Length: 219
Image (cartoon, rainbow, N blue to C red):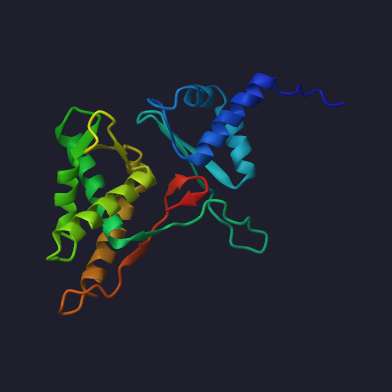
């Protein structure tokens, strides 16, 4: 008989609460309530549990978020299948992530505010410079909204309930769009701009990056 005591039912329930929520997406100290509190108490157990699934827990106490990402892969014959899928990003969405990351860095450097809130018009104006010109303004507006909605879906923008046309740039963006990501994207942007024909048509429009929006779908 093992001398190890079985975990209490309450602890099992809290561990399940944390892992299930992490598999659905990042946890935030300011919005995740019980799940965040349980994570702080059970971090070691969470690390052991998700490690069996080939995942690793990332927690940033200073910024107040936690998420799961794939462990570095061994591509040998005994490698585990990837639980966190890689997600292709379109060129406009990649551009928007880079622009938001740079705005976040500028805000951190020049403002004492910990939150960066942008109006839809501000985001649209940033992105328009990188979109092909169109005489159909309504179509362009729809495209911009679609790209913004995609970044919301990825978890890097959050709509403000009190102001539907305003968005908070989630600080977790810093974990995914780091200096290396920006450098790689700048290189790919130059390549992309070199692949636009004389009429301004896009020859290639998709870049591929890694990053977690949830434990089952990774950028």
